[in-house]
Length: 198
Picture: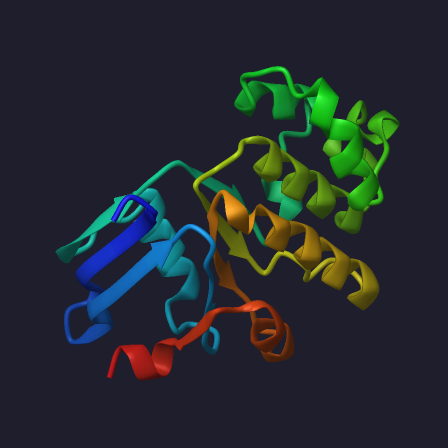
């Protein structure tokens, strides 16, 4: 299946042996799909991303993934305060993106001048949109998104999600959100972790 960008097989993970967070969990995600992981705090949403990224090691199971970009929930921790946003984007996007950046900036309600500032000079909403810009410019096969609109007002939040959905012709999105209405609006499939791990 050449369009598969994420395949999780029989994943089991626990911090405490008698309290597994995942038990024989399976997931296949293909280009063009947006799947939402939904669950209460502590149900394992962020843990799943850490396992996919390789920051945690599963006790059992395999994870295959293609090229990943990540949009974190807290944008202040995803940018270094010493360097400009533009410098940090150039650091991960190792190609010429000048021809496409203006269109994306406009859709995110950002301007180029903002990118030449440091993270502490921007609001939370501006910084989150910069995080989204950085991820889009990486042209990932798989985009992991952790509560991407938590720092945005409702109108901008839906505009941002519409922009992310346009990426689906070339990639897939795995979304973590507490916003069930947004999940229902944009997802091909919603996985409720309480149900998935019974």
